[in-house]
Length: 178
Image (cartoon, one colour):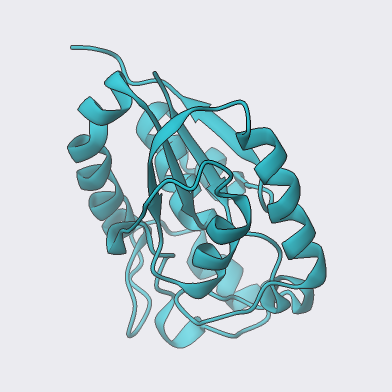
């Protein structure tokens, strides 16, 4: 069995190219359509567990996409990266990009990518047995998807920095049975 992950649908922050992090954002019309298309992909996946970030954009995406009506488990460890005082800044801001490249940098009032990975890895270690025995679906965020990708793949800092997860893209990972 497998772990499936997806990122929430497009939001108003995505359209404006703003850093969203733990700020609340609403799905755009396109984001709703993306979630509905995701539902079609999920029709053929018999997931038994559905873990969702507590942020509304992820909950809304899960509500649109949950074709099997599996009980939603709100999981705070897969909430988006906390960018602290950088929440709401223009995503292509030169200073923000320089800081973002330093994976150990803790944003003032926020967290570092290393801290994000710690909480995500703890969660993945916890659900590993579930995902070996059943299909598991996570509805989360770009930063969390990046952390999950590093859990399953050895990556350089540049590869981590440049890794992108599109809205409502569905990825599949398999845990190795130790």
